[in-house]
Image (cartoon, rainbow, N blue to C red; front, side, top):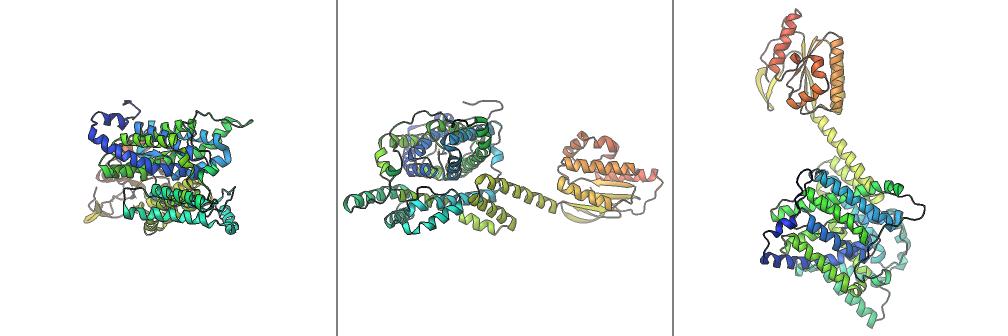
Length: 576
């Protein structure tokens, strides 16, 4: 299963089986069963919160979980539906319906596969941290806000999708609070919080669902309390293996137009899935001392998202919480991920009636705790102490996620991060003009040596990358200093030069040559030299005037000055 060449596809499942043994299977079996139990309430909750249903959530966890385990580039990754996709999935369903969601999910899978094939796995991991914290916190707030209807038992049939309108609707129905439902939701939260104090191996959400389902059944049977809605009251219950589905667009709807409209959200879901799965893989690597294959992982995530829509599933990715639960319970190979899907399959086939008895306020409590754990409030607090710009990027991303949508939030967040990065580089890049003498610096350390600058010569030193932000600054400075006939552009600290820098440098050289001035380039490294050569600048100034050392550049300047009949006015020693 190793596709050599351009495609980096090396599933860990097949490599692991070569040295598999019974002892490891025992550990993977226990871990898989526990993770499967943890995944039951989460899969059901995420399915319902996304606007589909419990069956779709379980189907996604089964099919995507199996494909990610078998084809993935990590040994312990557990895949399935996650809270991060709830906002996007719900929005797509509201605008395009279930068929639109199927198309968007398939497109998401295709994009992920292409990312893996083109080896973008390592690049995705460089998403700025404030943006990740911002949109994760925003998603947590949105998930929290979607649960108020079920938590308080308000009974609102159509809750507005817009965040502000949603809360206005909630406040308008405050008089309709069902206190029994609210008590079930609060009880669920308390059980989830208290369970780790008793045992950290037992999933609190699973315990809460069992207890609260039993409590609601007893209240209904013996106390006549039937106002607490259950899953069976609102959704069709799982009753076996799902049938194959094909996207069915409404009459008169153009597929190409729909694809064009869904492309931005599909790209956002692909980026979100890639970031979440690779972050999960990186965290897992640190715990088990392993190294994942990010490109293989992206391909596996893509295949999973291309397959699940045909069975009614929703977008899936690697789940950090379930992956860590797998590791903490002894799982060390993809077999544990396969076992976890078998547990979910058994629930889907044989326990549909029990699933239907789960009260909706209980699921709301589970999702509220999910949103709390996603919020990353500690990370938000930490970033606030880093820098104002990082905090601004984070809060902007968070607010845009909450008020508008995740696509806009990530786009604006990345734009702000890029601008911040450029600003920081510009602040750290200096351009100085020396016409008489200058101190020598070796790796930042000053010495007693002095530059020797021949008569009629100026040195323009660029200290940092020569890109578009600095190119205009260089242009302004050169216009202010135009008295000397010989100009040395010292580029020893120019690590790269972009097209704008090349253009401005070429303009500067051409104007100087038109004014009968001589340009000498000094300290040009091989990478920058190749860029200058491709741009025709080396030919423009002449190879004899492109030198790799300042001593050579000054010697060349002295030679030119002598040929022009000028005498030295300032003579001192010169560094590299």
